[in-house]
Image (tube, rainbow, N blue to C red):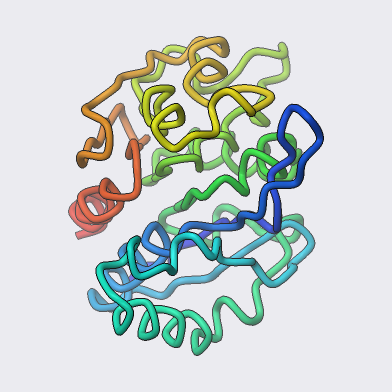
Length: 231
């Protein structure tokens, strides 16, 4: 059995360019798909958030349209409400990276608000990358990479092949023109070798111990890659 750390956003909204607070949180599919895969394989999952706050699920990820029907939406809502790991997360500032065999960051727009500028998360990501253990990040989760910094001020992720929610997908979602910044642009600016797949299709990029997925549908293949490495 391995111990896997899930780092979730603690944000309930994403501040847009005009100051509007767009309701958000973590995206349900990006949490539940890997969580089910890891726990079914016998692994232990711990959830951490900034300040240990109870994470908010993005209500848009629980709609019938997002999950395939009203009964599926109700079941997913109940599943999330019944998970102790989500009700009592640990404080991100108190996490010891060496206690875990893998680290995983789900997305949702929430990380664009808090994890993108969270120093504790940045230190954790830097340590996780250096450890050689699996570090998996999906969709908007790579926003957290922006807070990681080496002593010389450069990014530890510079030069790594990776992916994340694309500009094309943000435009299709209708928020690109209202955002302060776009994730793909920022990842490219920090020196990462950003790779882009087809919008909404599963797309996973691996480079050394870094495993990244572009969008919600990438969370399953990403989890499979983590499990393969933990086997």
